[in-house]
Amino acid sequence: MKQRILSGWNFRRVMYLLLGIALIAQSIMIQQWMGIFIGAYFAAMGIFSFGCAAGNCYTNNTHQTKNKVEDITYQEVK
Image (cartoon, rainbow, N blue to C red; front, side, top):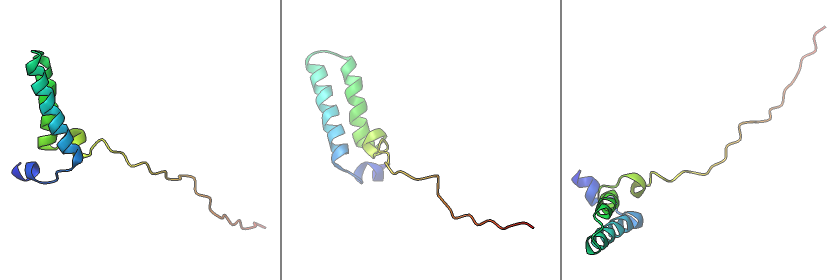
């Protein structure tokens, strides 16, 4: 767990952490207590690298052709 928290930091993880902390602080200031849970979820995504912060929401957009044209040779039957 310590290795997961300390390594693999990228821009997305930092942004999730900072936005989560900002949401928690803002929710406390305006006394919207439900916002603390939402902010804690986003901060946890940044700290523990799960969800989209770990890059799991990225899908590779590669197109593979399934219909390959092959040369077919026929033999004549007599």
